[in-house]
Length: 118
Ligand SMILES: [Zn+2]
Image 1 (cartoon, rainbow, N blue to C red):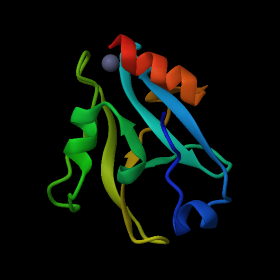
Image 2: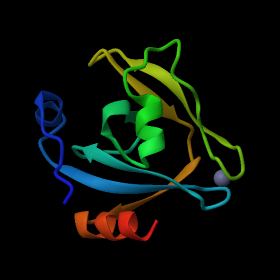
Image 3: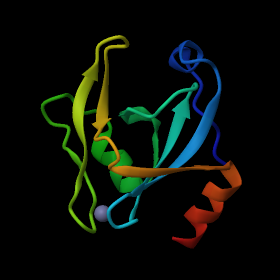
C-alpha cells in the first residue's frame, strides 16, 4: 500500500497530504499520480512527489534544471509543465500551465486499484 512521503517539506506545507490523479485536459490521458502536500491550488509539481507512473518518476529523479524535460502528454503532445526552481524551498519542480491538467482527488485504495489494472 502506498505510504505518504513525510518530511520537513510536508510539515512546512501544512502537514496533510492527498493523492491527486492528473489527466491531460485536452485528451484526458492519465499523466500521473501526485502527492499534494498542504492546502491550496496546484501550481507546480515537486519532482519527488510524483508517484506514478514509474517511467515518469524515473524521468524526473536526480535531475537538475538543465536536464529536466518539459512534462508533455504522451498521447496528444500538449506541453503541460516546464521545469522551474521553487526559490522558497530551493527545489526542482515542474510549473504547470494554467488549465493544462484536470485533477481528481483519489484515495490510496483508488491508486492501488489503478496500479493493478494498468
Ligand atoms: Zn493529451
